[in-house]
Every structure is written in structure tokens, then in C-alpha cells.
Amino acid sequence: MRVWQSIKMALRSIKGNKLRSALTMLGMIIGVSSVIVLVSIAQGSAQNVTSQINQLGTNLLTINTFGTDLSLTEEKISELDDLDGVKAISPVVSGRVNVKKDRTTSQVTLTGTNTAYSTVRDTKVKAGRFVTDLDNEYRQKIAVIGSDTASTFFGTDNPVGRYLQIEGTSFKVVGVLASKGSSMGQSGDNVVIVPLSTGQRLVKSTTINQVYLQGKSEKQMDLVMNEVKLAMASLYPNKADSYSVTNQQDIMDTMSSVSDTMTMMLGGIASISLLVGGIGIMNIMLVSVSERTKEIGIRKAIGAKRRDVLLQFLIEAVVLSGVGGLIGILTGVGLGKILSSTLSLTVSFTSSVMLGAFLFSLAVGVVFGVFPANKASKLNPIQALRYE
Image (cartoon, rainbow, N blue to C red):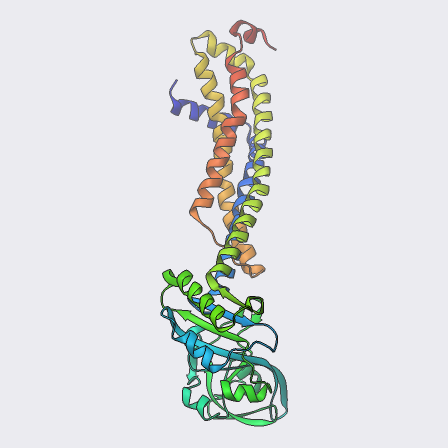
């Protein structure tokens, strides 16, 4: 018997028992849709985290010092800037300050830095300009504010050229940053950026405990990191425990590893329902063999071979799982889009996940369909014809 004839007979049998076939396929539908939804949510979350890390800047190294006994002076920062692989360097002082305009008062994150900060941290200005070296040299009372800060104090008006009171001192707003959203749990829009020298005065500290460095090439980041570590060891001998050098790529690799583990775990949990669906298929196929014993006997009596009967029931199991898998894909995509819109989740659908879930459903159909099909093919035609 040809395969196509077996497929047609399988479809005819499924149509003859629509309710039973639908309930049998339900397990596969739930299993495939669960795999697609859970894995897509996990992959979407991973992409979201990667995007947030990328917002911190590109080719980024971060130096942090701990305590007040170890600080990065301008001379030592200049030595780090002279390293071969370093493209730009940006020292930072930060803190929380009180900002006021008219009757509106709020606490805002203050960042004191230099002009290279916009390049190192990939910070774009949508109106006005950024901090310049002259602002830093002459300790100018100017500020570049985040989009949320601009909305809080100026509403829909253009803030450029207007003034804010920061810790009781009047500062001229010279620029507004483009929105960056939240990154690693911190808002990048509720900020005030001032020249480094001015920021040190506002936070009442000249200590620089954080420096951002941008490498010239993503491929050379490991080499640049080693250069920075050697330079820090030379600048601060026997004080390795008092500072850290962090590579942005290391953070991304760690987060990627965690995300991959979560994706595999969620996919594995969802795959259990596919196995349960496979057991349902085997159960129904065993019932089908019992119901159609006389039919099998007649087919064998008129010349059907064992492999023909085996192929017929095996294809029937595969068709059940395959159709259930296709419906499961459509259901999973639909549920994913609904969850994405209603719960504001990042859902990333990939063809490889859908294909993998579908092929797994077919494999389940084959594995759990072999036993009933084998049982049907071994029936003795004489005993089968006598079966009531």
C-alpha cells in the first residue's frame, strides 16, 4: 500500500471520530503552544536584557574604586587614556540632588562628567548640546537634563536656555537628552548631567570612584581589559581588592548564560505536556485497534501485508500529532501576541523554535504510535475475523 493511500485512510478515520480525534490532538496542541509561548517569552526577555545592557554604551569597560583611601586622580586617568586600545575615557561623580523650579521640587540623579561621556555611554542629545571641555575647565553652571526631568520641570515647553535651581544654585539648561528608558533597573531619563568640576562641588567631594572607558574595537576588548588591569596594578600596587575592572561583554555573557538556562528549563517543562499528549495518542490508538480488529482481519485476508497494517496505524498516529502540532503553532503564536499586548511582555518568535516544537510533536507521534501499530500488524487474520 502506498503512503498516500495510508494518509487518506488515516484522515478518513480521524474524520469518522471527530470528537475523539480532537480530544486526542488537544494534548499535542497544548504541548506545542506551551513550548512556543514559554520559549518565546524567555528569548524575548533575553533580548530585552541585552538591549538594556547595550544602552549602557558600546565596547564599555568600567573601573570602580572602593572607599575613600583610593581615588582616581586626573593624572592617573590621563595615563589610562593614553593606553593603546582606549578610544575615550570618562570620569564620573554622582549623587542625588534637590532640583527646583518655581513650586516644583524633586530629587534627581546628578552625574558630573566630561564631554566624552556622550560617546562612551552612547548618550544622544535631542535638543541643545552636551557638556564641553570649556564648561568643565571654567566650572560653568550649565546642565544637560534627561527627558523625564524636562517633563517634570518644564512640561511640554523647550527647556533649552532656561534655568533650574540645583541645591539652591541657578543652572542654565543647555541640552535635553533623548529618552533611553530604564537600564538594569535604573532610569536613564530622570538625570541631570553637569561638568565634572561643577558636579564635584555639588556633591561636596573631589573623589572620583568611577571611570568609563570605551575600547577602539569590540574584538580587542579582552586585550584592552588586560591593559587596563596592568595599568591599574602599576598605579595602585598591592591594592587589587580596592578596585574592580568590569567588561560589559562579561555581563552580557553572564546574562546570556542565565537566559539560555531559563529557556531550556521552560522548554523542558513545556515538553512534558507533549509527552502526556503522546500517551493520549497511544491510548486512543490502542482503542482504535480493538475497535477495528475485524477490519484488520478482512484486510489481511484479502492480501494486506503486515507492513501495510503497521504503516496505516503508524501514519494515523503521526497525522494526529502533526495536525495537533500545526494547530499548536497557530495557538502559540496567537497566545504570545495576546500576552505581549496585554502584559507588555517582550515575546520573540523564531522559526527554529516553531519547527523544533512541530518536529518534536511528530517524533512523539511516531514513538507512541509504534506500539499500537505493531499490535495491529501482528493480529492473526482468522482470530481477527472471529472478533466481536
